[in-house]
Amino acid sequence: MTHMRTGSTHLLGFHTLVILLACAVVLAAPAAAQAQDAVPVPVAPAAGVELQYDIPLQPWLVPTVLDLKTQFADGLSAEFNGIAEDQTGEDLTALVEAGRELGDSTVHMRAAVRAIGELDVTFGIEGISRMIPAESAIRDTLFDFVVWHEFSSTPARGMMMRFERLVNRMTAGGDAAAGFSAELAADREHLEQAVTRGNLGRIAELSPGIIETSVQIDAVCGTVAAGARELSALIDSLSVDSAELLVDRWAEASRAAAHAGEPAQRTGPALESMSDVLRILVELGGLLDVAETSVDALSAAPDADGTLYIPWTVMKNDWELAHDLRERVLGGSAGQTAKGEHDDEYVGHAATQQTKARIGALLVHQVDANAILAERAVEHTSTSVAEAVDTVEEFYLDRAGYSDGLKDKRKAKVFQEVDGKLRENLELGSAKISIKSARAALALGRAYDARGAGSEIDALHNYMNAWLHCLNAGAAAQRSTGAALSR
Image (cartoon, rainbow, N blue to C red; front, side):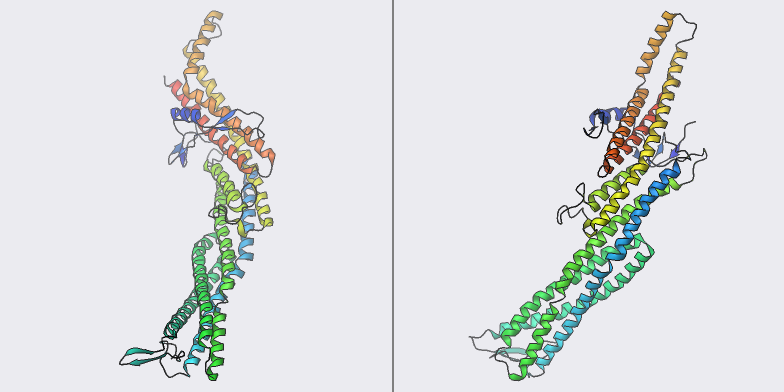
């Protein structure tokens, strides 16, 4: 009895299959396969309905495949944990401390400006201090209006207004940085807890907010640093010819402004490094979820017939996982990607070459596991197609009245008639094409497998194709017997 299971896919009809097989082919790589014939692209099952045919995995086969996939998942998890534990703390701490330092620096600057204002009788920056006269300019209030007195030869008023704006901008920036620093410190604590617990989902959840807050700290520090340079130059101008009592206070204000610009020197590199680490953690976390899905599929309880049936998407997901790992984390076939090149896709900047080498070496476990699965699929489905051919042929022979006692001339006529009917059975023809393509894809996968490191993606892709061809072949074989027997 045909095994039926609910899956995420169903097989496309024969006529669609014929069209796709005729229109789309993957050419065998000259150096990768002995046979260089075109291998048809298999039709992937569509989502949402029941499979007509599925591939049983015998109990003796499952432990070996499961062990290989577990080795891959465990190895990837170990690399994830290593990056999370070793590379997240230092940069986050640098950003938190930079925000705090900027907040403290602008408090110092506010105090320095206030100290200058203590020696002046005119009003100054609201909320901070009164302000001294700048050369010939005296600013005072008269009936609630600001009245300026200055000589036309001296741009004192403009200098004082710039001074006010810069002081206000920097103190506001310091307040904002202190707030962002407090937020980031809280997120850092939550991240440390998630890393300790190996909570990949929580790490992925926290990462965007951490990056956003870090970007804000860096932006504020950069803005304040630019203002600090401008303010320091302005203080140099304003302090010229100052009264002796103000010299030291102007110097203190200049030092405070310079100190407020220092955190920006650290936030940029820390933000870049930390963002790279979080991006690779999010990527590896997602890939690890996929790897564990495959492990879960192989760990499931067998069906009532004692065999295990896995979704075909296990093969698809394993191939896509290897592809994404190679392209986004390891850096493509060359093993590395220059900073800025495809930077929206590549996230492996934070990984050391040793880490990348260890991750790349894990792919062989996936290749070995899926080679076993593909071989089982081709072996089982080849038998199923052969049995379907036998069944249909025997049915046609029976209907044509064949028996061993027929005369040779009659036998020849019956054989000719049966041969014609076998050729007219399009479903049976589709099954034969698909299983032949499955064997070719398996051979091509083995050829890539034999190449070793760097060919894992191609090997996995062909093993997936072999599995898909088997699904199409098995379903077509079942339809061929049903169509023949219903006539």
